[in-house]
Image (cartoon, rainbow, N blue to C red; front, side, top):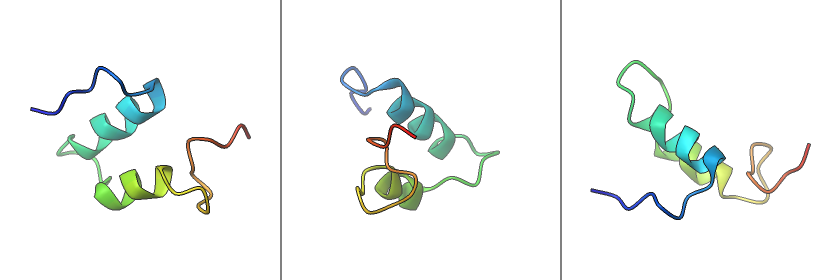
Amino acid sequence: MVDTSDLTQEELDTWSDINNPNNDADMDDWADTHNPNNDTYIGDSS
């Protein structure tokens, strides 16, 4: 089991989407949210 205690709410939402069989999200989405060069980067305030 993954320890999610140190994840932000946005990370938890992404993680939830990835683990939801009814959702198309995958680990590529996780990578995208952690890549500062990507439009969906968590650090973006926009």
